Length: 389
Image 1 (tube, rainbow, N blue to C red):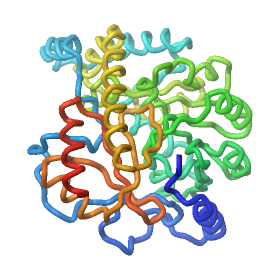
Image 2 (tube, rainbow, N blue to C red):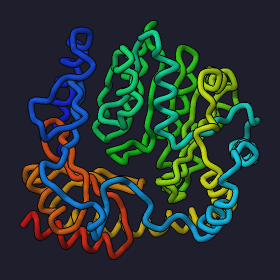
Image 3 (cartoon, rainbow, N blue to C red):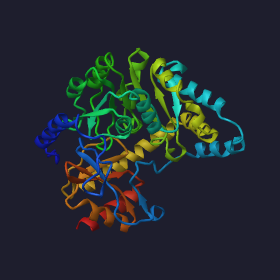
Image 4 (cartoon, rainbow, N blue to C red):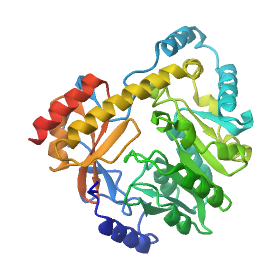
């Protein structure tokens, strides 16, 4: 595959970032008001629409990596039945869910923390780890929630560019760790690239680096892989490694709007957060009962995975047939470089009722499209051809 990211420029960008990291502010005003989440050290920026649109009128909402098939009917029933319990706290349900998760992940319950989604876990972890500064090492590009919060608290971000095949540069990340590193963050599968880092290499990295500083592995999209158990790092926690694993019910479980996720980590890491915030107080009884029901329905996850794979392969084939290079993905989205400017492309898609994300990677526009139903992906393909013609 002919990668559209110029590796030489990527390396040059990384070296320049390292040289200017200490002097650069955590957040700077973007030169281009169309770009959001601006990071002076990153090769990734997100386009924000410079036009009005009504998201409720989209015929294909493919901009937020949501599962179009969920929640499952059993989850919906569990939530509906829970409404009469709305006058009660969900502490009992939280205990049940923690026990179920602990059994699934092969750890004791003191290794589990619940939270309203995994992004909440990222931000809470950032608050605990970077209250007194330090630095965080992560890939670039990657999901920026934890790094953004850390920088707001006064920490320094040390970005390490992905390799030429879009895996985490584990050797580069290990070398970036120093005495001031309070956390290493890895998103695997990675967002927004959708790429996977080799499991055996990542396990060796986590085992080694976690002896120096905690390693946080964000596995939000793991369940879309055909063999998630072979690619998870959660087993390292049971081995006593200082590794933190975040999972969510927002993606494969189809519960993005219900806000529930969990952290698997050593008890002392869990306690470092729960001693400062009460994790289960942010959860409602409906979401808890919905998550419990979803845990009992692995066949629904398998069904979503299979339909997601079918739609992804269809979309990949259609876009590739037009001559576009697509980063191989095992997630619920894919990303590829565009041949037109980001704003007019995005406006054209939204004007036709199709919501997508547009990023600049090394100052060139890329489209990230979430997987919807087969019908929605057919609409996306037809609209894409029309807009880019």
